[in-house]
Structures are given as C-alpha cells and as structure tokens.
Image 1 (cartoon, rainbow, N blue to C red):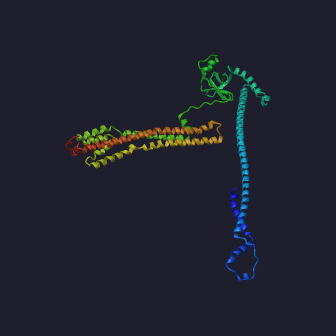
Image 2: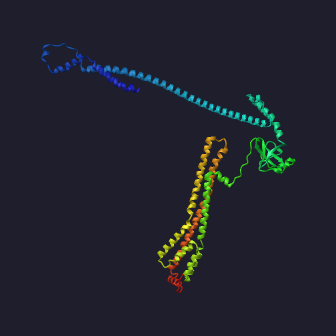
Image 3: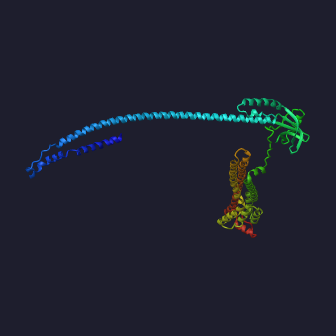
Length: 496
C-alpha cells in the first residue's frame, strides 16, 4: 500500500509529460508563427502568401491539457479507492486467518501440556508398579531361600508360571506358618560348634527360634553366632552360664545372646581399637604427624629443663647482692653470683665487673649480657611453633589424599561395598584428628614457654638495671668498693 502511494505522484508526472509531448507539431508551429509574426516581416512572406492553419492559443492548449489531466486524476483516484478497499478486505481476511492460527496454536499447546502431564503420570505409575513388582520378586526370592534352608521348595511349575501371584503367596504362607510355629520355640539338638580359640567342640545346640543360639559342651560353651556354611562359633566367651542354665531347662535372670538374621552369613568380630591401630589407619602421613608430635614433645621437655635451670628467685638474689655491696663486700657479691649457675647470676656477675664504667657503657654491658643469655632461653622455641603450624597442614594433606583414594575406589569398584571405601575415609579423618592432636598442645606449650623465657629476660634486665641505678644514684660508694677489692677499709653506705 505504501509503495502504491509513493508511485502515484510519479505516474501523474509521467502522464503529464507524455501528454505535453504529443501535442500536434503544426499547432506548435502555428503558435510559433503567430507569436513571432509581429516581430518582423520578411520580403518572401509578402510576395508569396502561405496557407492559413488553425490557430490555437496557448491558453486553450493548457485548458485542454488541464481537462485531460483532471479526467486522468479522477480515474486514478477511483482506481486508488478500489485498490485500497480491496487491500483492506485482504488485510482483514489475513488478520482473521492469523487470529484463527493463534487460537489453534494455543489450543494445541494446551493439549500438548495435557498430554505431557498424562505421560508423566503414566511414567510415575509405571515406576511405582515396577518398584512394587521388584519388591514382590525380592519377597518371593527371600521367602524361597528361607524355606529352602528348612527343606521346603516351591514347585517348579508354580515358580515358572506367570500371573499367579495369589497362588504363590498362598503357598508361601501355607508353608511358612507351621514353620514359624515350629521355630518359635526353643529346640535342643546335638551338633558341633567352634570355641573362642578356634577348636571344634561336640555338644548340644540350643536354638531360640531362628535368631539366636547357645552351645553347650564339656570343653566350653556360650552364646553362638554364625561362622559361615551353617556352622556356629562362640561369641567372645559370652553367655556360658546362660547356655548351662538353658541346657537344664532353667530360666536365667538375664540372657546374654547375639541376635543374627541368617545362619549362612558369617559374623566377624570387630578388632579392638588400639592407639597403634588408629595411627596405622591414617597411613604414612599419620605416622609422620605422630613422629613430629613426639619430636615436639622432646623439644618442649628440653626447653622446660633449660628454662628451669636458668630461672631463680631474682628478687631474693638481687636484694642479697645489694646488701653485700652495701656491706662493702664486692667479692662476696661476685661469689653469690657465681654460686647461682643461672642466667640472672651470670648477668649480675657481668654487671658487677663493670661498676666503675659510666652509665651508657654499663647499660650497654647489661644488654650485651642479656643478649648472650637469650640464646639458651630461646632455644627450640621456634621449632616447636613450626611443628604446631605444620601438623594441621599435614592433616589436611592426609584428608585430601584419603578423599582421592576414596574416589578412585568408587570409580573402579562402585559404591556397592562400603568396606572398600573405609580405608580412604579413615585416612582422611584420622590424619586430620592426629594433626589437631599434635598442633593444639604444641601451640599451647610453645606459647607458654616463650612467655616464660620473656619473663626471665625481663627479670634479668630489671635486676641488672636496679643494681646500676643504685650505684649511680649514690646508694653505694664505688671508691670504697674499689678499696675493698684492694684490702682497704670497707665502703661507706649512703642513702639507699
């Protein structure tokens, strides 16, 4: 429609140009002659008169052309209206078709959704039926195996037949009810079983239904558990008194028995957990963590010994030395320092040897002596803290290793047997546990011992500076001390 509207003006212009081009040549010539005649008269025209053509003025030509164009315009307008009406009718028809298609699409979409819902419901019902069928088949199989253990088998024709589930169920219940009544009581029959030491003993087997049993023999007895292949074994030497009482038809006050589901499945005794077993379940990384923990414990004990050997009653020793200096006995003060084979004694002895020096030099001597004694005090401290930091990281490494091993087992064997996964999970958990067991005490001990060493160094600094301040504050006559060193009269005591 838009293309037609743009083309109509071009069509009108073309039509006008064509009409103008088709005007009679003689009319145009006459017009030219008529117009140009007044401009000049030639001698040939005067002598030879020409034929007089029909003279049409320019105004008349334009009027004719205008009338022609008006007729064409009316015709084109009429055709345009007819085309617009036809296009509108076609557009309405197309719109109606589109609406009908949209309604049909919506209806079909709703129908598809309904069919999908019905399909999902059918699949769910099918899965439920399949699940019930599998459960029923499992029940049949379990019942057949149970009855077969007692010499009762379902006929082959009944077993292979299809669609006779009520008949199968009736047969199973008919055979199972008398068997349950028979097995519900206590039965005693001769047989053999294995003792706790693995020796086979002949005696009596006392069955309490089909879930527990006792064994009695001259060599021993007790509560029995399946050992595989229909045999029994004594469970951890338990229930011997109960077995003897039941063999005499006596009712014990308390029954110590083991309840089992099947005689054909052997029951294994779980090994007792020991420290070495737990460590070994952590793999090589677990042993590395334990070795580091033992090494940290040895270092901690050595450091405790060193700190204890270098610690003493600092206040008592400092007061004793000041009193000896006040009495003028420098040698006695030095002897007291030498008698205390500790860091504080050595620092104070080093201080007493430089009493005549100025304050700056004396303080430098004190700090030098403290730094010299700091080595033994700080020994093994960083190593203990490093072990405390490394142990959890080793535990994390063991966790990652164990999980990788577990996923490898799952990839190779699946998840059917949990025992295959237990090793990797054990490594993952035990190494983390060992890492924390080593790290926490090591961190606490390392921090406490470091604080102890800092206190010893602080006490050494305090004691040495106290003596220096007493000397430089006028509390002791240093010249008198010098005289005492040379055998002269003792020093004089000032205001302490």
